[in-house]
Image 1 (cartoon, helix red, strand yellow):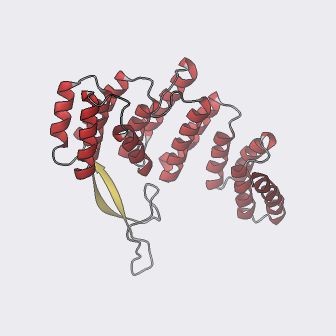
Image 2 (spheres, helix red, strand yellow):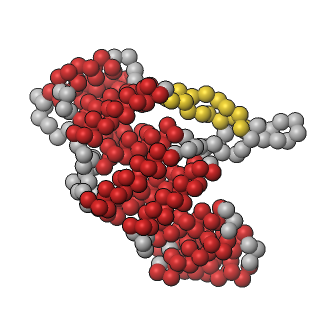
Image 3 (cartoon, one colour):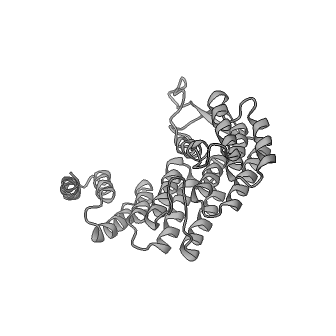
Length: 293
């Protein structure tokens, strides 16, 4: 969520390269000043957004601001008790045990109003319609969707597959705030960020989606070590050490200094209590880290 709000602030609050008398820029500046004082859904924000939309219905910045207003207002939270160490990738806000020593940890649980979330989606869709090549607009929609779905991000998975398919078949020249063009390498890195987010959620469903999305990405980038490492990590967590090592070894055959594969192979050997194998991978890891320095 921190990354989501950082991306949102960069999109909405970054000044446009426009003349001082440019009315859309004036609205953006007034909006930025107001949000700094009262927050994204504070008093007066909706009134300003209504005026901005009436004056400039084709300004994507006002739709981004509307998205921020609706999504922020849609989210509340409650406290729930769970018998686990993490929830949605987060540690408990109040770790506790009962009289028998069983975990009864308390977590913050985000809750979203369906109507306001739908309004946020409608706003970001309009921004995307006006600027279909803005990859950061697509990311905002998908990241908000993932937050909304919590432990079962199945719609997020489908949206990401559609985005990857569009990237790999239509080859659009994506744009982002402050960038004229997004490279294929940068696009892959963004997709890896979502893989990591699926993994960190920690639910059974998100773990399967983490594996399935990594496999889907390998269908387009067959030799990408990031995605092969992902599948190795999936099997490592499942304690299927044979399959995990198979994927890590695939990576290391082509990328012998891949730190993720080497570090996880050390963990794998340690989990198997195989001192000889751990020593082997530890030596390789130390050599690879020395090259990095």
